[in-house]
Amino acid sequence: MAGIFRAQAFSKLTFIRPYETRIEPNPVSGDPLVGLMAEVWDPLWMLGRQWQVGEFAGEDTGTPIRVDVHAEFDPLVAWHPGPFGPDRDWLPLAPGELLEPLVEREAGRDAEEGAGAAAPAASARLAASAGAALQQTLLELGERTLVAALLEHCPAPTPEPGPDGKPPSGWAAVQGVLAGRAVDPFEVARQFAGERPDWFTAALRGSLERRRRAEGAVDDWLVWFDAEVDREVAPSSWLGDRLEYEFAVATTSAVLHAPQHGAGEIGWATFDSDPSRTPPPADGVEPELIDRALLASQLSFPGMPVSRFWEFEDADIDLGAAFADPHELARLAVVEAAIMAGDDWLVVPVDSPPGGVLRVTSVQWRDTFGARWHADEKAPAVPAGRFTPTWRMYSTSERAWEGATGEVRRDLAGLFVPPAIAARLEGAAIEDVRFVRDETANLVWAIEQTVPADSGDPRIVAALPALPAPAIDPGTQPADQVLGYELMTYVPTNWFPYVARISDRGVTLERADVDRGGKGVEPAGRLLDEEEQRRILAAEVPRQGVRVQRVPQAARRADGSWVLWTGRRVRPAAGEAESGLEFDRTRRPSPPPR
Image (cartoon, rainbow, N blue to C red):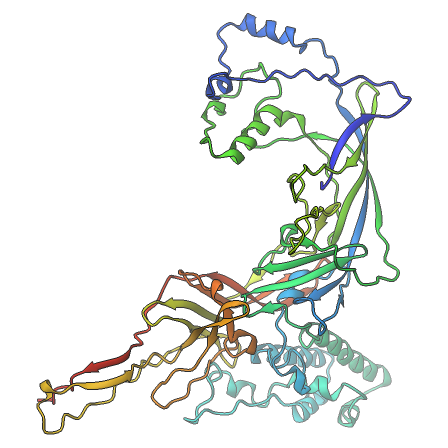
């Protein structure tokens, strides 16, 4: 836990003083190998040593037989998307809601134009599936007339053909199937936003009970569609200039800030305590008190030495093989703790609810001799001249801030258990963009490799090759005696340049345009088309490059319901690249064909 517990006996109770003698190897040569091997040639001598240190006396070897743990659970009540600012506020966090979908879910592009926040981002395949769910439900109820009315008043939109007259990529095989057979779920939700339309009421048939059953089925579908497909999406937590997420969560008494989340699993190490901010008010939410009566068990781990020091180890364990260089202090500390005090630890499991801070307030136990003990939380003292206290596992420390050299960083009292996903399903990346450095051209290129098609499936970008250089007319001069001048060469159509700029934040990379021979080329995907992705900090694109992907994901909540979202993943790329871009070069005219 976040606190260091100090054991002491209850007052006015009889107890046995703990046995404080410990036998540890202390090699004077500086080589711990001899002491770790613990070589013994005389078994009688080993038995004498066991008698000498009191292993046969059974003194003060009481084992806890009942442990009472009292804890306090402070639940999460709100979360904050993106960085703190005047244009963003705290949002409520419902119990049982998962944190990853809220943080990683993408907002719709045209939400400000009145369309549904998720409507532009939803793929045609998802829209067709949602509409088919409504049709299938009504058909099972025998409402064929109502389904026909839906197809007439809310038909699925037909994609506009391209310049060549062909349907868009990904729709060639399904366009004829959906035409006249599918409904537009977003149009259905729009028309049913207020009162039920007249054409719906006129299409209802049968008795009053049958009409109510059909109306209830549509109402249930609208609730599901609004919650899972067309739900209102919070402002994005994605920071395009840093290629990472930033967000915060709040309990009734503390604020935890995640300034640099690189997507994926959200754990306790993602957060820093932020005591400078006040959590939002949470009316009616109080910390939960947890009382548990448990049994303590011995801590065990692979390669653990036996509990009795003078007992032979198993043949599979070679403590003498533990090796560490003199500068590997962390490994030496871990090996010493495992070998010298590995059998001094007991485990008392306390189940914690998800989504909050669990703080153990009291631990009491009774041992086999009848003595009662308790442990109180004692914060570690901060040594003089140090800014941080001693390091402790699983503790959430206060974030570092400027100008706080005279202050002391404090740890959050308790263990933070975020409402994270236990397991998820990930599909193929629907968009894949590589940011690579081109040292020859002194540029950073964003290369679109995969973009979403109109159906929502990933489509590999078929980049058109760079345009050939314009021909040089030597005139009446011999071709081998004429030099032509070129201002620059052309690059493939899926390469987009980023130019270094100096700003108040240091060196930033700003997306620019490049001459492609008179043809304007725009990004085919969503990532590079976003305004926040036009500037990137130069430090975010290392020598090996970086790869940003949009990945569809699915997970189950605690109540068994599904949640679907599209998140972003940042992974290393495959190194530098050569675009072939050159400036101010000369070349000779191509020889005439023979």
